[in-house]
Image 1 (tube, rainbow, N blue to C red):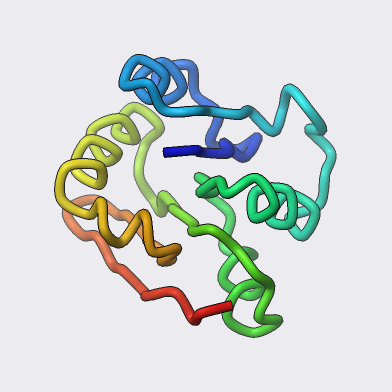
Image 2 (cartoon, rainbow, N blue to C red; image 1 turned 90 degrees about the vertical axis):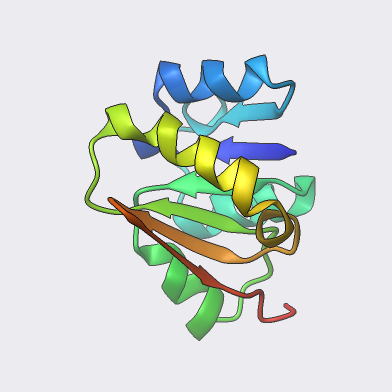
Amino acid sequence: MKFLLDVCASSHALRTFLTNLDHDVRLMGASDPCASDDALLGMAHQEGRLVITLDKDFGELVFVQRRPHAGIIRFLDMPIAEHVTAMQELLSGYEADLLSGAMIVVTRGRIRVRPSSGV
């Protein structure tokens, strides 16, 4: 899979975990750390990448403004040290949702999946 790590979610541990599993990982901080969320979402969509973020603004962009996307993973109210464990769970149990372009919100002990709106 292809991922785009938002600046706020670009931990070394998460990047290393994903690249060690042969996923294609791009860091937004390496290309344009000041890019708007809209620009980031557009870039990710164009490249077929799932956005990994902590920002809630992506829900607005996707469900209210109906911006096209390839999928979003949002970590909510969980320490960065738990992101790798959460990604392990997503990759092992939610692959179809990840591939379908769903919006997935991960909190401690809970994963909520909102299917793609077909945009």
